[in-house]
Length: 142
Image (cartoon, rainbow, N blue to C red):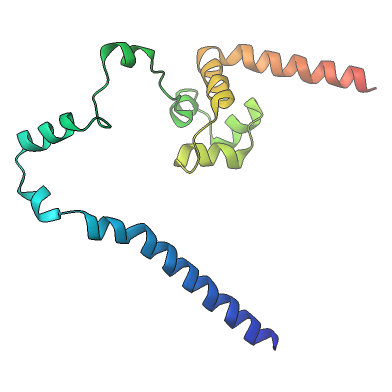
């Protein structure tokens, strides 16, 4: 095959794969959901259906009290008056990672959530600790 033909075949295969994935993702919803029935429900009927569903129970006060909010990196950064670049540099977070968190492309993992909570609670202590760690690392390497 020529280079152009190989590229065309690859592009065709990618389009077919994307179409197959799209069909798999949408066809069960389209074929199994009775949209007319749902749209005809009153708010009370919809609420009762949700309450009758064992997989869709509201949180109890006990469960709600155990939940922890996910720290909002953008809100933390803006409260400090920092640009993304300055915040990332100050707290040694990859700029792309920070952008992904702020745009919702990725959710911080548990370690990152804890780090963001510490930054939010005492940013000066974090900066100091990072500076101390850098100086200690440099003195041991020389």
